[in-house]
Image (cartoon, rainbow, N blue to C red; front, side, top):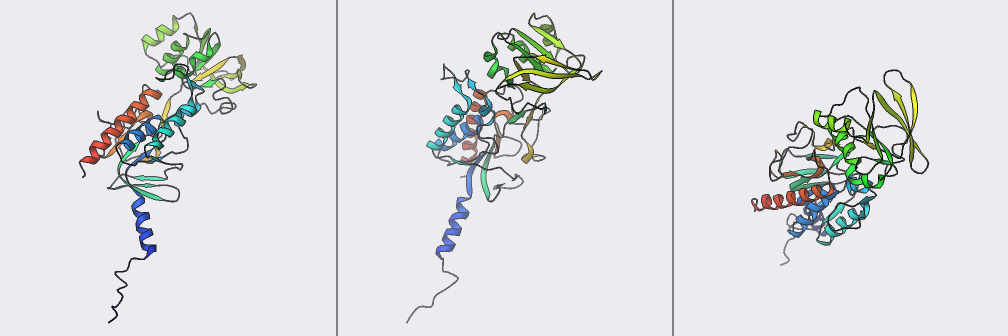
Length: 329
């Protein structure tokens, strides 16, 4: 007797493929961001055999990609080009089994587990998430700014100050960060002129006194930059008085802009506890207010914003994620 075929029990090759695809869209850990924090997290997670998925976002390698030469990252005594360092991070992450997707997260749902990560044309789920979207330096949004980034415009004195030895440079900003960076730049520059839109600094008294008493530091008050001009590299600024509207052209060898940083928190808005500085709040294991969700790098660091500190935080977040996932087994 020929057995009857039970269609309900039959699993077609198409069904098997669908199930495989469904399983392949679930990950133990998904890392959002592919800068130093995200890629360091990927290296550690991959070495723990978690096969992490890294979603790059709009900027592969993060702010490292904007830095011409990095001379303060350990292991490179002669310095290394920023994108080249990022490429090495990526190579090492891939070597240990990380998958890197060049896409942008459209939405992130942390309200239930597994967590849901929606990209442009696919949805993933994950048992743990590491947020490493970084932060972007706030821009002046004036003509010439985008054109001369890395060619006379910088947002990081620690990264690029050395390249302005014996140069006359300008710093835009009046808060603690701006004055700290201006003072740091006096180690290299011939002169450092701070341009501030108000008639008084917002920096603390100690910093202000140091700056005012430093022989290399000068101030231009009640003034904003309207345009950055150059020919291959920056050579002059068009500035305007906020009181009179009078404009003036100022020659310069470079401009450092320190008017704040904005963490890239759009996809997590309203889902996690934040700090007063606008960064993601984490505990000593870099876990956020939601168990299983970790954060590392500039998205949770309002102070240091260095490649080496971001990389260290990424590694720590991955180690914490490994420990968390072990509790789910």
